[in-house]
Image (cartoon, rainbow, N blue to C red; front, side):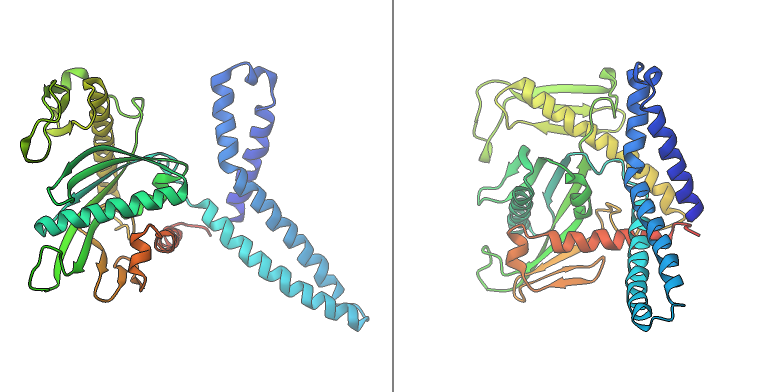
Length: 356
């Protein structure tokens, strides 16, 4: 690992010289490329330099242990213990920094929440999840925009698609993909029996046009009149848009906006995210043949979390974490769960890295 860190530091020094070179600065594209690489490894280099300084301090302190001054020796032993502890902490921090970064982590999110098994109760649970993520986003200072929705007559969601934008949104929300299960007495249940219902959550990185190129000849766009609950008209113009991607059969419908142009832009944004997700899943499928990922696979067939109302608990089945503060979680207090998932993900990745 030390050889690898030294190589990274050498590259950092080389890049520092390049981004100060007038000849390179004059070529904006080349300069930006080097600046980006320089910034990407800066944290690792600074932490490695701090680690090397601690090693030097350890050697200097060890020399004091041979002193005839008992008081000085005692101080040296105490300082040495602190330095060894700091060295181990820095090593762990460096290992985490060496984990390859997900290129999507800084992207915004397109989140799809759909009612699963359980009829109206599942739709109400989908609305609870929508509220939970909206409140979490608000705590983080992120912006939430409903891109498309299909509501039920009693206030649930058959489906709702959100655009969540803000720093690090995907890096934290990507662990939410999967099947969420609720156990409670539904408001629609007269007998007071506990029911189990589900909703699925898909978290996609928002992608720009440069990330996914859509051939205009591969899409079919239909326009129609928007409809509300029970089929009543909510718009007297053909503003709703249905986009069909012919090669994959993906269909995206948007009707929330009154403008056909806005609905078309939203539908294409969702389509780009879906196509990008398909490409990512294909890559993950190839990786999974040799090593099964423990967290954040995005497999929607997995039951990732249970929200149990009678016991007031939330259990994340991937890491065996149970919290007895259900209402706080549903009010958007998700950091403890997400932090635990991130730590578990890092631990799994470290196990599969060769840092010798």
